Length: 112
Length: 111
Image (cartoon, rainbow over all chains, first blue to last red; front, side, top):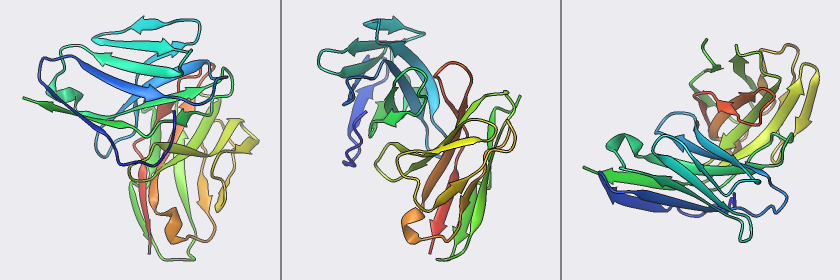
């Protein structure tokens, strides 16, 4: 991800809507990408990952899309629930390196 | 299976004091790392270890020391705390995959 130290962007959605959170990364050599969810006062929680040999990967209510051409990653959350309210971070690395580079995060607010 | 645990949860230090942040994992993971998180920013890597006896620097290592004498433990030492080290510190671990699992964090304030 791009750690640029900006004010945390916020995405506000209605309960039941679909959410799309975007992330840009800067290292063209990165081949492994992860989305984390961080609730207030807690550590980042793994949501879903994808490797560079894939464009799309689906989990339970979540989908990650990877566009290597423009170095862009997105997280789609279907039927967003109040419990999805949190800050979401993307992170990238190269296989075996393990050290993650984090984006600055997006705050998701779900309105009931 | 407690996963990754960190102590203490909160700590207040005066400038110049030293302390050790503890991190332990019970998953037999080879890889462990320390990150710091400042307001409005993502996590930044401080130090990491690929196994017992092996450590290396990350993106922001200055002012911090680490050691890895066992697979389970990876303490982070602040030798002389500075206000710039006020942050939330997260420890993480992973096995042979690249997915890292994080502890609950230590919130440190340096006055």
